[in-house]
Amino acid sequence: MSTARAAAILLAKELRLEFRTRELLNATIVFALVVVVLFSFSFDPTSAESRRLGPGLLWIAFLFSGSLMLHPSFGREQVNQTLDALRMAPISPFALVLGKMLANFLFLSAAEVVLVPVFAILYNVGLTGVAGRLTLVIVLGTFGLCVTGTVFSAIAAHARLRELLLPLLLLPILTPLLIAAVEATASLLAPEPGLDRGWLALLAGFDIVFLTASWLLSDFLLEE
Image 1 (tube, rainbow, N blue to C red):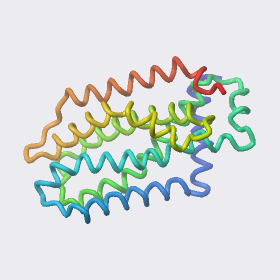
Image 2: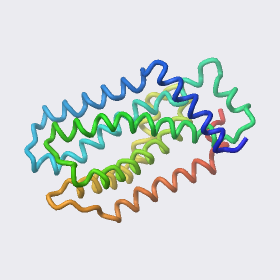
Image 3: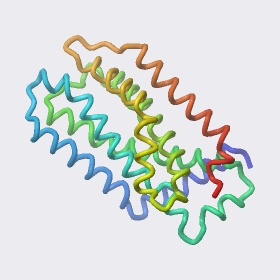
């Protein structure tokens, strides 16, 4: 079975499991909305402050939401040794990791579809003229977050303190991604919006490097 077909089958499994209960997706959306609303009430920013501080707060909300969503990626496969059964299947180990990455990307993107309009309303930030470019930045940043988070979720799945280990491993690695995403978003929310291609290239490069690394190291990611 090809890697693409196996990943598609695993992605369909993840989607069926999640939309059967919607527990993780609903919890992530509610958590992200609470973070954005609390930030808005705490700072009560002016329009200028919203454009200056808003990108950082938005990506912090994305990061917190992603951490909440990525944690159970491989943790729930520990029940009844499901992960061992998947490893015994005649598929590439990367197909399993890729299926999880795509599922996490879709779930987090669904949460962001709800979060971004709420952010624009609460912080009085207009997104009409930059919606397309902002979507590109968010897609690249979210994909990098999901690729990296899924990899480290697989590493931490067998650890005793995996709830603590995942953020400790993930946050330092994501620093370049978060800086590039915040700067690119800030340039789009400026009074004279413009997308810095340097930050966009850094986001794309980060995604390519970590996706390639996960492909090359997929055999070791799922080892005990």
